[in-house]
Image (cartoon, rainbow, N blue to C red; front, side, top):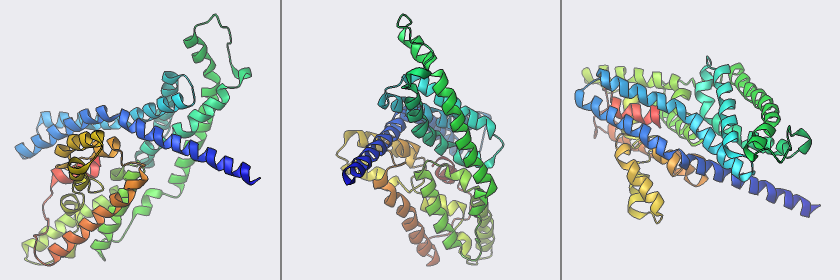
Length: 360
């Protein structure tokens, strides 16, 4: 009995390990796409900084970046499904396309929901983790295969025999994703982010930094999830401006610009230090190359290349520093400004803040 339980535990560990490996490899596969997207954002940000504002061509570049950014859940679910298809010995391109269809159904069914913006990236990761094994289990059942004629080409047989598994699993996927969304809407998960800012801006900033790091680590877009808090932090800039104009001190200098300039140095998780350490001390050539590629972008708080390329997302070994680094920056900057060593941020720093919170 104990031997059987031990064997089951070992099997579950093996499945979990293979899924984590698939996630890491899938994140690496979309790295070239991320580089293209981040290069466009980098050029647009430099242009905005140089011109002191937006121009029509800069607006076009930002719109192009946002469009590409919206494609990443699709790219991620396709890459992850392809790798899982290899592990489960399934036809790879059809499985990737099926997963794209599942994500497309999710997007269409809940396109008017605010929760979709928050959950779409994690849905794109989570769905293949259970849908591909389910398809594999059904695909192995010979009595569910539509054709078995060996005279047909392998591609034709594989494609036709995937029809029923894709339909059955598609129904399950829709039910599961719908249940998640119904739960999110019923309990209004986004409203759970409501916090009192005025009573303790420092506590507000600490919780914001921690939650933002946790969300990004799980693959959830922190900007959309924390939008109500971001609006509060933006209002804090106005309060700080008024206090500075009157020569007064206000604890509300923990504002939107403060978070981007002092807390999220290098992007969410304050990863600029990690980039420098990897360049100087990394033994892996691949890690050093990723860090070198990330460095110019990290100077503008853009770190998606590092989040997906290293990766940091779903990497348990990096979770604690990813969580604690922004918190340490927050405390250090708060003490420095409170003691009068540094002037509080009372202007909107678009370049640093937009990148660190909107991008990652």
